[in-house]
Picture 1 (cartoon, rainbow, N blue to C red):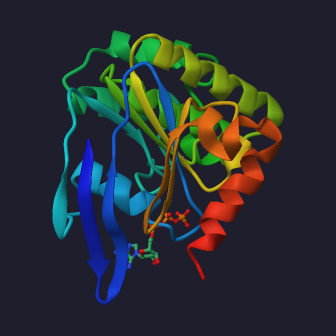
Picture 2: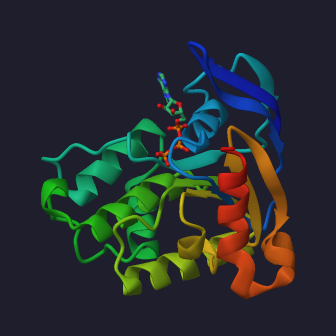
Length: 221
Ligand SMILES: Nc1ncnc2c1ncn2[C@@H]1O[C@H](COP(=O)(O)OP(=O)(O)OP(=O)(O)O)[C@@H](O)[C@H]1O
């Protein structure tokens, strides 16, 4: 899917020959410290940034949650979704469906500005789910969620993958997403690891975080 992607901003080479593939029915974690190039890679995937070289191939429709794709603070949850649904040529019933999927059916009249972080994460996911996408791209989906919200998001992401969707989830914290992902891509400018979560840390769950941190910091020296 990502093939030999290169991207520089001035003389800062942000992505170097980045190649990896994400598969249907699986949750893949795109992991790396701040500034590793995760958002840049996702932006290339979404066509928001043009790579200097390399390609990203996507089969089917894409749903995305990203911080920068902000909501209008003064509209209600329902209206926000209706606006996006209409722009995609979807019916109001589809808005009802995604509201139920993310558990926001009781908050439809709430204005976005008064939504909690957790509600915003749910709203972002609902927006991403509107077109019933085959590929779901989630940028830091657990940010700001309380333990209950993290648990809920994990279950939902797993269920969406079990339906045969491809889920690509970017995070800088392996410990946060370790229980949500099947596969892991560790990025720090270049791909440092690509494989199943089980393979990271030689299959020892206790070693996951140290293996990840070791990879990420080794690149610095
Ligand atoms: N439009 C831009 N112009 C110049 N530099 C940029 C631009 N976008 C990103 N960068 C730089 O590219 C590098 C990678 O940024 P990117 O946002 O892709 O990292 P990230 O892994 O998503 O980090 P974070 O976890 O902090 O969001 C950073 O050094 C950033 O400052």
